[in-house]
Length: 103
Image (cartoon, rainbow, N blue to C red):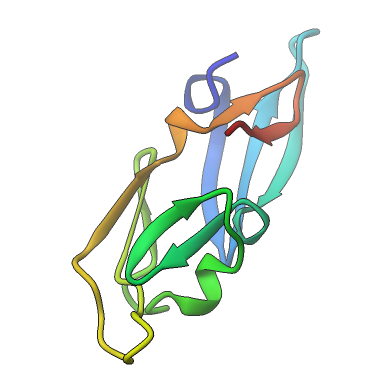
């Protein structure tokens, strides 16, 4: 089931994607997915399958716009890479009320 189309009150709290997600029986439940466990930072670029992305992101720029996380990520030299966009709808699904990251 599509993550964004079957969710409401979608938000980011730190590294966690939180949403009220529709279950197969039509009920709603809150689901939390820690993106730090699935996305990393490779020299200023999102790295799917990595980890710790939030810890190396500019916390001020870290935001959710629709289905996209937008942020600046630090490089190893301390500078920022270009602004990054990660469309969560490409990777996150709703599996009977549970947000799941798919690689």
